[in-house]
Length: 197
Image (cartoon, rainbow, N blue to C red):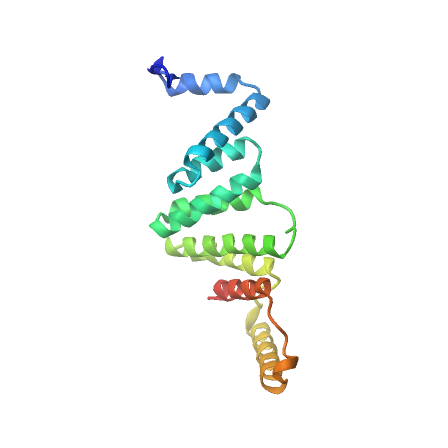
């Protein structure tokens, strides 16, 4: 039925079941094209509106553009965490993680994936699911090559190694011989500290 007259002519379905039936009659290729067109339209008009991030992620996902869907899921998850909508944040970060499968392409990609897992760990912890929080935090550490030590012995060895390295590098080596931290390495170490925190 007509919803708005010209020049912004729009139609709507009388019932959601009719809308779903019409959608199911479309071929997957048609759906992909329509979702892409809708996502592009929303991006132009509402791309900077945080309230539209989840909708944009939905359309990019069904347009089979996972990279753009992940970008908007990440943004939507961050906004949800800032607003205290923890369950929505969990949904967004879990969807982003499910779209991003396979090995990490590079260090920046691994850092991004670890950041999602840290945010998931924090969100699950806020709703009292510490088992789920620990699982996601451990996954994040593993992605950055810093798996959680097993048992007291493993933790002790790791602590002794890190302490020795700090003492030798920062106290015994002259300043000119100390290794320089790149921005990428600094970000990785900061994320590891957040995951352990």
